[in-house]
Amino acid sequence: MANYAYERLSAQDASFLLFETPNEHMHLAWMWAFEAGPLTSADGGVDIRRIRNHVASRLYLFPRFRQKLAYTPVEKHPVWVDDESFKIHYHVQHVAVPDPGDAAGLWATTSALFSQPLDPSKPLWELWVIEGLANGGFAIVSKTHHCMVDGRASVDLMTGLLDESPDAPDQDAPEWIPRPAPGPSDLLFDTVLDRAALAVSFGRTIKDQIGGIRDALRGGVQRAPTSPINTTIGPHRLANGIRFPRLAIETAAQELGGSVDDVALAIIAGGLQTYLARKSFDTSAAPLRVAMPAGTPRSGEDSAQPAASIVALPTNLHTPAQRVAALVEARREADERAPSLERSRGWLRFAEAAGHTVLGLGVEFRSWLHSFNLIVSVLPGPEEPRYLIGSKLIAAYPQIPLFQNQGLSIGVASYGGQLHFGVSADWEILPDLLLLISDFKSAYDEIIATP
Image (tube, rainbow, N blue to C red):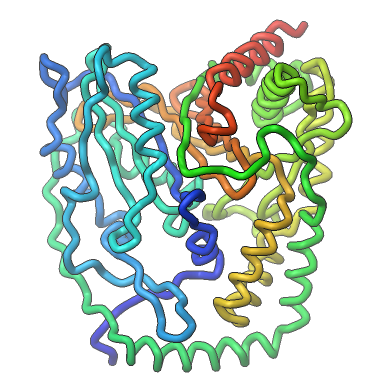
């Protein structure tokens, strides 16, 4: 038996490392805002020691958080190995918002943290505790690389770190003993064996693999229309957010004949239409296209559900009723066109068997295609309150990474009776992001006022 341990990244997870560039940072992030509680002092400081101990006590739930990347010889495929020099102090850090500690300062700090890439030589996550808020509370910005989690798994991170009760007792961190990492010769030997086994498997099921590729391409070969939000991105991000009462959106959905997700997309469509019109861009010719990742299926979910959808966003329509009706139909059609999770697994098995070079070519093709204008990721968060060592979580805004030629991403998360819209943008492409946020508010008001 080998005296070392490692896990090879799947083709899908490895692809997010290939997407990473100095301008494309592939980490998912959250900005969590907390009420003042037992962690805060009278002068606005936060007990970082207790937070570090708390996070360390929960890391057994997330084994990847104490692992870092290594690479196989020749092929250079990434693998996970235990980080023998892991230090919680590096990953849980803190910073203060400049005076006066208002919302603008909090979002500016969040933007700066979101703009910084993760260190590839260490486990690919960080938590930044932000103190000095004028309301006496504090915030946390979490950053986790997309090769470790998708949107849904990032919600699991939130629920794993936070408690359902404000009175949950402190826990000691279980002892952790890192496993020895393999050497280059070990990885080379294992890779040769893995390649041989995968080649045999691939040869037996080649028709299924080709079918998976065909289905994967069929859902997204159309290029997205040009727009002011789609141009070459830089390394700097602007992050912001807005939240709306979920009950009001549910009521509007029932009256307009759609779902909560349809109304959320209608808010985004209406806001973008107003924002782009302000820039003298006519959206009537062709609606923008939005990519909606489904995420990893949870227990009991049907593997025939769509893996991802590219939906026509009705930025060319002018009333909430028209937008919601169009979205109901567009999402139905997109789900029928999109490859199912099972068929997408066929594509991923093909990429795994064909090797890292072929996977890289697939990533290059997707970057060149530009099949969508923006990403909207809808995340089902907990409705019951969550607490960090007695401090109540009051808001949770997801921040979704930007891909090449994509200046805007939006995460929509449900928590505590609110829908939180976390908006991520390229600093140079959307320097007036607050205007777009106000346009979303206007679109929401219009929907709620619709008889």
